[in-house]
Image (spheres, rainbow over the protein chains, first blue to last red):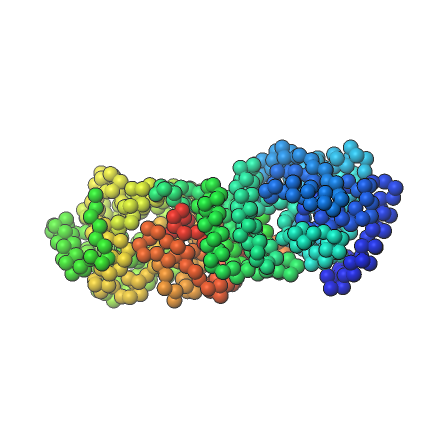
Length: 320
Length: 320
């Protein structure tokens, strides 16, 4: 049973001191490695690990091809300013190869997990000889895994799998007592810039979690463009999260007076404190129309746009 | 080229007199038959044919299993009050048999068309020996067929198919110069009650046009329930049309704290004059939330609800 620390109860200085100790004890006189996706959780873990280990922490950004527009450049640049060197590993071919032909969400997550841990990251770790992996698992991930709602790809220990046996290395999860609001508070305290620790959450499987059906480079490019539009238009909204989802269903549309059997983008925008429950944001209709116009004109192949109006539960935040 | 008569230019008395003549000339001293779906177009044609032929017009309601809740009883009862006898033919098995395994929208329409004309209705006509079929094709149907946007099932003549050869009978389409607003004006003049001529449009392929993917009795039942909810909640809105669409895509949801891989209903509500262009109605968010709550609680298997925000074009009014 993990002891929750609420954002209110969190004393960042004391928490950082404790976790720095914990990480140093786990690593000993060796080195550690962590994968930085650019999200709040992995960014906070990177700063915590950097604080504990300095250059004995290797932070890797895995370019899996399913990230948002310009993500690698953005993350590397941002951490360079903070004095943290980030290594970029191009693994696009491996990920798209693993995802080919898969439509089931669980199998997708599994393919990404396996490719990430066993192949790309596992290989890096094995080649480097490092024994410890820092990871940004938070309490909500654990809850959802235990409840069987969604298998997060970063909760091996909670699932009773020993990662030393499963993948050849050990995972340290310093954020596991916190929820999203606690992580934000901690990130702020660790010196992460506002643009980063205030970032809306993004799922582990990245844009592949935003594609219903098969994940191909073309479909990822479609949802990537839609994601850019949604993030551009909604960035000024004070909300928990927003996203664009590419559906597999084809719907009838028309362009230039001709039938055009096209694709649909679903937009979700959530009000939530901690992702456990969430309600669709009551966006003004002008904003919904702006979203629709921009997606229809900027994203090739899209003829239909919807806005999610179902709360969590019974919906989940992500569709896939 | 069909000469359009706008609603404004329409003189119902003169139009009725002309069409009554035209129908009588076509039928001679024989009889005619028409299929009444309960929509505005077929109801108006029924009244026009009844005016021209009295008991020499046989109006048939084909129970195809893909109609809205209580539709047969409603239509038969309503026309009984108007002095028109309607025959109900149960053809549910034939329609679901023809639709089994089909997911392509065109093939669905084709299966319904073929089942309706060749099998069910064609057989009725052949058995009865009647030569003339009255049909409620309107100008928008013709436009969309010519433009190749959507094949309506009732426009054989415009598509260059001679229905005398294709299916063994002749089609008379007295409403073909009108659009929806003109048909409503005409229906009023023919004595149709407000509840009917003010009815929102419903597509020829009925609820099968509201199911993306395979049409089964179970999926029709799901979309039928969602349709009842949407019609109940939106009936007081002054809009052109509203609908519930069952998606084939599965989305992640949760019920009782457990993962529940469920289905999605898309709600569309349109502002439009004549269906040629349309914009999503700016429904108040309270209404959207009411829709979502009611669908999620009343329709088994649904975990997600969206609202369409794309205009026509590039969307079409129906999704299938």
